[in-house]
Image 1 (cartoon, rainbow, N blue to C red):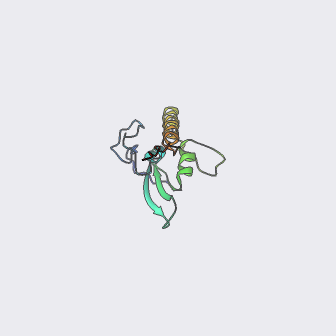
Image 2 (tube, one colour; image 1 turned 180 degrees about the horizontal axis):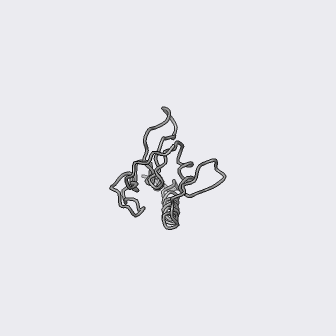
Image 3 (cartoon, rainbow, N blue to C red; image 1 turned 90 degrees about the vertical axis):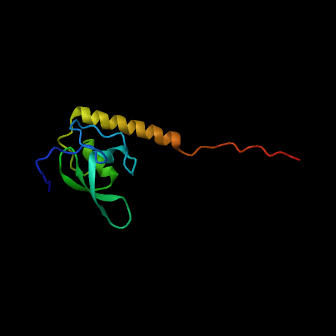
Length: 122
């Protein structure tokens, strides 16, 4: 299932490999931070958000949506997803921090009620 080339994994699919597990500061198209820890290989189906992807940490090739990428990288058991056995504690902490910051930005950017300017009577 996993294709190992012997090369160091690329930890930033949108930038150069750093070898430290860090991601580049440039977010990819999806803006979901954990997509930066995998390399998208091929979109599955004409619609939807399912991809064939390779984990940049363990090198295994999988398919699924962002939810499955999340479960794989954060080692969430019970999701019927193989967990990444090579994620270090520091990488997992970095990912959790990125997710937390991303969730905060999403909430701040959510639509909110904006008062309309009052109309002037002439």
